Length: 594
Image 1 (spheres, helix red, strand yellow):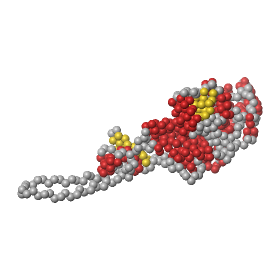
Image 2 (cartoon, rainbow, N blue to C red):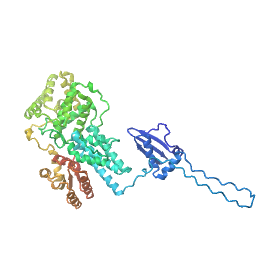
Image 3 (tube, rainbow, N blue to C red):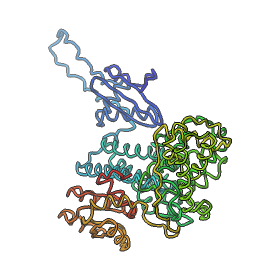
């Protein structure tokens, strides 16, 4: 807050001991106070913000008229004083002249906001229900974070528009209800932070001066009847969501055109950490908002570093299915920072833009250009034997150590090499990177020494690892270990699963993988109402809802019913087995839930 020294506070208030201050950023706020009184007004400019504060200080039309009279210097008309009695000169009574007609009352200046300053009062039950719904939106955002991080930018934007338009419809419906406004701002703040981390692109509806019609262009659609209220905007998003998410190529539940692949060589988490370190070296911590300026200007970044970014983007596409059960939010943050970097680099790195495009289909031949799984295992076994020979030797020169490291880097990722060389760590610490002629190997050695210092050691694959299946057959659940942790805690539990359609195959998969006793509900309004009665009778141990398919009003009805009966209510995105296992793990507090 600051006071620019301008005398914009009405003189009547200043004379009454009130003080004032003003704050301007993307909008303006004015604060008027005296003793324990606090009046805060907001608006696009100072005058509007002052009017907002005065509306609160003088809520009735009569109070505002009196204030305007004093502000503009108007006083009550002076009444004529009676003349003092004079000595009688005659006993004759002289009748008084007729009194002149009373002058009309002066017309008081009318405030431009008289007639709309008195805010309506709302039924307490309606306000409580609206607050409850807004709290559910906040919880939905938190529950959706892992799945939201895995989505393509277009899908992320559609979900953000649905959340914020619904929230703002309540602020619009309950104008002036402070507790409603606070919750809506919390939702906007939460979504703004997510957009800065995941970087789906500009979301105009999150801005303070946004208008409902902006959702049409945000969805990439056209209409002759643009929404005029936020309630209409939310309805528009709900009705056109599927059309806005339609792609020219087939995509998965998260909006990516990736095809099922074999597990990439190396641990997905280790590959993710390597990509994270490379990106953060250029563009700062991926969990913080992007920096205003890069340490090294984009045009000065070396080609080797840019090429590495492209390789990391390729690796991130490869591991998406496999990291989904481990650390999806970090994966989304790294991809978001890469999108931000691609925008700063402009046309300098088109390959990076291509790999970040969700509709780009990675070529299948790329998975076959590298060594086979058998060849990788043979290389790793040879490297381990060579390491054992170096450990057993009384002494060996740097040349032999450099040759060994070159083969180790070919067979393992950096954290795995850090584990491999622990028995000879003093020799690794003493090596100078400039001993390598290849600049790439110098960078690898520097990275290895940093990883060893930080203690970020990888897990070496064992010789007993089974052969990988063919790519077309490798479509098993990458989160099998998470399912194994969750199943003992939910096996045999009675579950109500709510979707928007019947799906016997999915029901069978969930029952088989998690051992659940599932009752399916297709989201029909009458069926939902009947299930709410079953929930009140404690007929279920869990209520699961596929929010990726379901309308928000159904979500709210079921959430209230489950909460009233103290039954866990779990949102499971589109209800795929991995998403269900991850959501249940989070609800149960299973440690490995991402």
